[in-house]
Amino acid sequence: MDNKSAVSTLQEFGAKSKISAPTYEFIDGEDGGYVCKVSMMDSESYGNGRSKRDAKHLAASNLLRKIRKLPGVGSLLSDWETNATDEISELADEMTNLNRDMLKELRDYCVRHDMPLPIIEIVQQSGTPNAPEFVACCSVASIVRYGKSDKKKDARQRAAIEMLSVIANDLDAVRPDQMQVVTPKPTESDAEMIDVQADVEAERRKKFNTYRELTDAGSVDNTGLRLCDRHKYFKNFYPALKEAAFEVIKSDEYMSTKDQALSLLSALKITPRIGVVEATSIEPLMKIELNCEFDCLFLGFESEIYRQIIDYFKDMLV
Image (cartoon, rainbow, N blue to C red):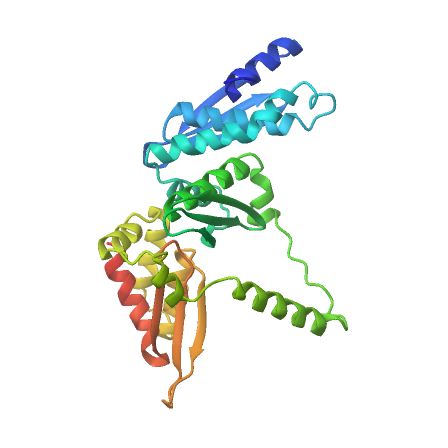
């Protein structure tokens, strides 16, 4: 399939197989984007993008992945399968060059379809100071995809594009009402498993250099993050989530600031990581890290930290 798009491949497949051509339907997405639904052979898939062309292209790619699993279809689409990886990579380059915020599109897509919010982080850094290479990991529920680039931002964008193409193809797999939580029965080997996991984690940490070593080598970006960028991130948060958050902030029905702060984070679909910092004070010194795209860490005494979180979002969400 030399230089052939997924849309034309799908069209030619229908013509050669003497079946009905694919049909495309568009609806307006968030922030002026589009969502495309493509139907063919009693199957359907979705794709979204800033333009109808991008949405249509992703939808066609997702449908090709789906129908190639049908009996007798895989061999007919072998050419497309061979070039699928290159095609997605080219699409990722195109979207990145257009300066589209695929992280925001992925988050908005998850909110619209009642999915868990995506978690994206840099999991590997390699290369040299002059030619660094970063690998970003994007996870939605149990689905994990990766993106690689010489810039952290582009690596995250590529991981988001990969994830978006997957979840748009298999929407039901990551819906909360379709997910099952299984609690395994404890076994005698649980303690051994915990020890093994601890050893694996210790070994993983050995692979990372210390911050001082990276700084001396010039591999750490010391430019910092502008406050206006962080404010813009929360200000442009999904409107429905912001509305729910303000209802919590304005409410006087909570028994404590802790309950109110945790409800506020839940309304924003942000999962906090709460811990205690070793200190000499009688009152516990708490550490609360927010699991979102920007590093956000609160440190304070237990009696004060939850009020700090509430006041923080009062300012950042407007």
